[in-house]
Amino acid sequence: MSTELTNSQVNEMLQAVAQAVIDNVDVLTDADLATGDGDHGIGMRRGFEAVAETLQTAPDLSVEDAFKKTGMAIMSKTGGAAGAVFGTLFRGGAKAFAGHDTLNTVRFGEFLTLSGAAVAKRGGVEEGAKTMLDALAPAARAVSETQSDDLVEAFTAAETAARSGVEASKAMIATTGKARSLGERSIGHPDPGAISVLIILGAMRSYGASL
Image (cartoon, rainbow, N blue to C red; front, side, top):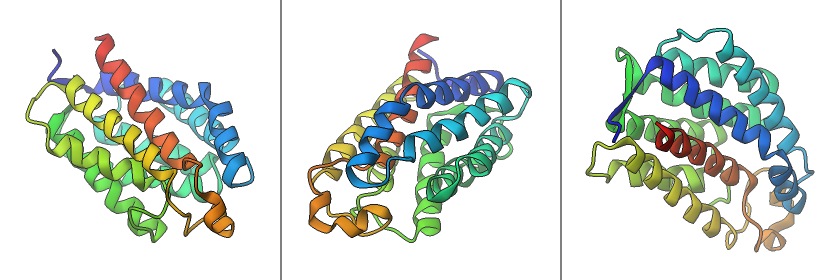
């Protein structure tokens, strides 16, 4: 049972997250082809390749700075709306770790809550609009309700809630982004951004479980 991650472990975890996104480029491309123009996977791969490079060259970053630089790399290389909102996910939540040199369950929950609020503000969206927020917001609530200080349990709770959010997004009508033009035709397809959140949280859970 792990109750916290050190700054070096957080760096390793975020590199694992980057690799998971890169490995799932085809999954994200196929999901985006159903509701958008199919460029989500390529953009995310480009952004997270930049994340991996950034973290590999700066292994001694604080937890807060590791999340901030992850967000900055995504913003600078992903492009488009995805770059803005996924960069905001990491940068907006990074303040949860200000003044701390470890990641624990409480701070992870705060990170997700702050990330969700920042993404909602940046994208001008609310939960239920068929966006990444439909995976991120349930994950934040699940972790905030976690009674255990075991990080793997917190990561698992976040991943499970995000997966439910991805499934729920299939029944939603897109009201923002490129999929908005589809209207009811977007029903039946999961949101690519929500899938990306699930991949990110799943990689965190896998890393935690490997310790």
